[in-house]
Image: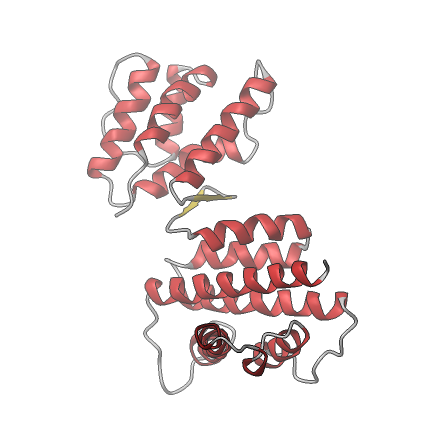
Length: 265
């Protein structure tokens, strides 16, 4: 069970009292479905005690955290007294989330267990300004626990989208069958991500592994994801399987984008 980071509780104990009355704080906690008794103390102490109790007794503290942050990170505070100070506070909250490998997703959702490639890919995707790619990235993170099959489908779609963008931007010929395996074949040949282009034995193993992992993600999507109807054989996908596919897809996606950037120099 992931808990609310203590350094985030500390900053929320400072930020929330600036923008909430006792009544609106109590209402915010109700919205977050916090069932414990709300203490009759100062606002900073109230926030701290309530969130500490959530960590101790709630089965899903990050779900509660998402609902607490939703008003602030989804634009619910329309007219803060000091806009610049408020913007700094929001950035501080986002940084603490990132430092703790957490990501806020619009709608009051906190996604945990982010790897460095995932955080790096998120930054690159936002820079590309491709809505469909951003949507698949968020869909994978949003569904990893509740619907692993949906998350695996999104992980594969991320790689497909990156490949399609690369092919289009570089005026390459799109394969007749636009599945992940065929799309990636076009991209890796263009970027020279091939077994016969590497002399170092250790790098050769890694390149071979990348190709095998892409094949594996494509096959998993075909056989077990929400993108295709379930067949006779049922895959018992768990969140850990979805995370494995997502992290692998993000690592390879980031490698492709960095190789693309390097090829332009």
